[in-house]
Length: 229
Image 1 (cartoon, rainbow, N blue to C red):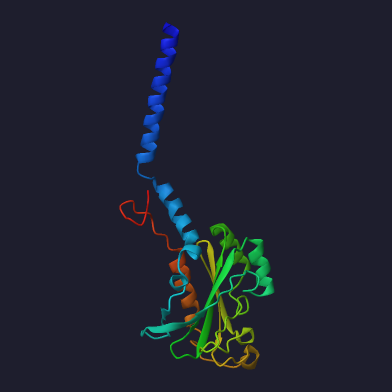
Image 2 (image 1 turned 180 degrees about the vertical axis):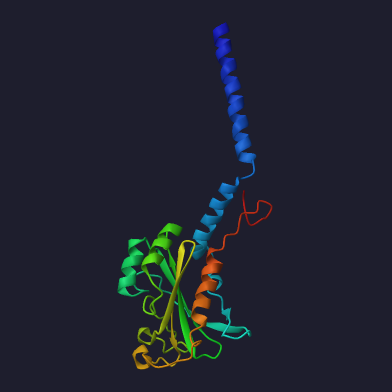
């Protein structure tokens, strides 16, 4: 009887300790490492969770080589998100090798409507995959396919008109750009000809803005209704 009583008391003490430990774990504040992991997971979900207009705002600011800010206006957002169909064949091979999930594209026109820029957000499983893909893909005008939109200033922008391009990684995303002139003149027609140095100056700026917006982490705030800790 005494042995049975001792065993019962032992189980009771063990149960109390286990419950106390569980309560402490469930009610404690998250650690800094847990907050960082949660922030990284939130960034990785943005391409699905955010509306298209938040990823590609209607207007983006840029500096045209002066101190005066100008605005690039969105001509449209492409409905296709296929990795292979949104980039050239060589780039598609690299993206697929590193686990590309989707490519989101939108096209912008500069304030004077003389230059159009297609921006592509390539989605990867994690930052390491995006980093490795960036190492293999240079900033090339032909890496990303142009997205034209009938009835807009970007109506004539096709793959043959691509003259400038960039690549920038932001978190688990690789942001590619390709740009040309809104009249649709082929790149071969202007090859070797002198052009203004700042003609495509907005191209890396638009890519950087979108990459930075998508990849900037927002650490969870347990006092905010937007987060559940």
